Structure formats: C-alpha cells, structure tokens
Picture (tube, rainbow, N blue to C red):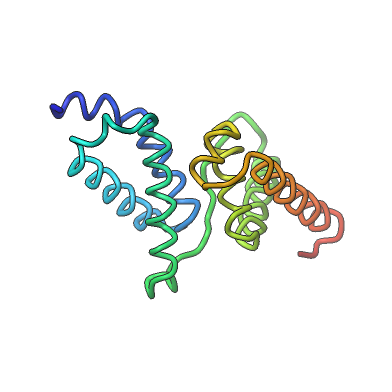
Length: 169
C-alpha cells in the first residue's frame, strides 16, 4: 500500500478519531497525541488494513480502547471535559453567552454519565454513526445501544432542564 492510498483511506475519518479522543480525554493535546498514535498504528499495520471491512469503525474502536487505557493510567489526573465545537457568529452576545453556558452544562453533565452512555451519545449525536456501526465499535447489542442512548439523552435533558429552571445541578 502506497502512502497516497493510505491517506485516501484514513484522511476522511481522522477528524472523527480526534473528536472521539477529545470527548473521552478532554484535553486537546492528549486527543492530538491519541489521534497521532492511532494513525501511526494504522500506518505500521497498513498491510493488514485491506483485511478489514470497515477501517473507520476499526479505527474508532482502537481510539476508544486507547483513550480508555489512557484514562485508566496515572495520566488521567490531568484530563477533564471541555466542549468547544460550537460557534455561531450571527447571534447576539447575550444569546451566544447563553448557548455557551448551555454547551458547558451539557459537557459537565456528559462528564458525569456512565462511560458507555458517554461513548454512545458521542458516537451517535456528535459523530453521526448509525446504530449498527456503534454496536460493532462498542461490541454491544443494537438494542443496548438504543437503550444507552435513550438513557443518556434523558439524563442530559433532565439535568439541563433542572439547571435552567432552578439554577441547580
């Protein structure tokens, strides 16, 4: 496999790998390191890439496993969730502050979700994977993915509503 063939396969989903790593590790630098490590592993095993039916799903699984390993290690004490993917310049300053505050609250709430729910909501709502792909990546039943996603959304909705209604967590 040549370098250009490798790049044609890997480049379309490298940003998704980064976003998943950032969601799990939170630190931009840690996510960049994890992404680079995944791409390096793919490059080192480029002869085997063609054996996989879905290289993107395989890469996302590798990313999930690497990030969970990093979180389990002693490096985890420096990591926290920050979500800053959303910017809209056409709204008023007040609305922008409210949106940023809501995104910050969603990030905090997601931080408290169980690991499985956090990953399912990241892959489905942010990365836009379908249920079958998520089930394969996380080695879960399709129904379990739907249940985890439903519970995660319900928890986020409830806590965000409480926060906006009462100003409490």
